[in-house]
Amino acid sequence: MQEDKEPVFDSARTVKDCLSGADLLLRGMAANEERMRTACDDGFLTATDLADYLARKGLPFRKSHEIAGKVVRHCEERGIRLKDLSLSELRKFSRLIGEDVRDAISLTRSVQARGTRGGTGTEAVRARLSELRKK
Image (cartoon, one colour):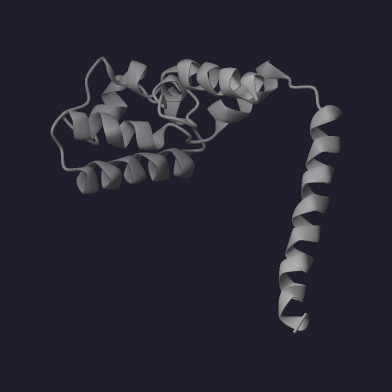
């Protein structure tokens, strides 16, 4: 009757080993904030924020998501970053895009916008740290 439990025991050992490895990794890690920010700017982390921005302007999300995808494709084909597009270039994709788009697709605003429990916003992180300190 014990053989049916072996996969559970094996999974528990694997999780324990992974957590031990993560602990070692994090203890020896030093974060380079400047390098991290540069790496984030090089990708398209705020493309969904562009879609959200267009949705807030009244465009159905499925359409705004499609437009954001076209913007990303445009950038990839030209080897440029989303944040490097001019306002006039962005407006070619939608007339709803205005001067306020820069704020909407900024990395800082994107992080702060995630204010729900477990999110990346400052208040959400502070609340979680407070919970952990109490434990």
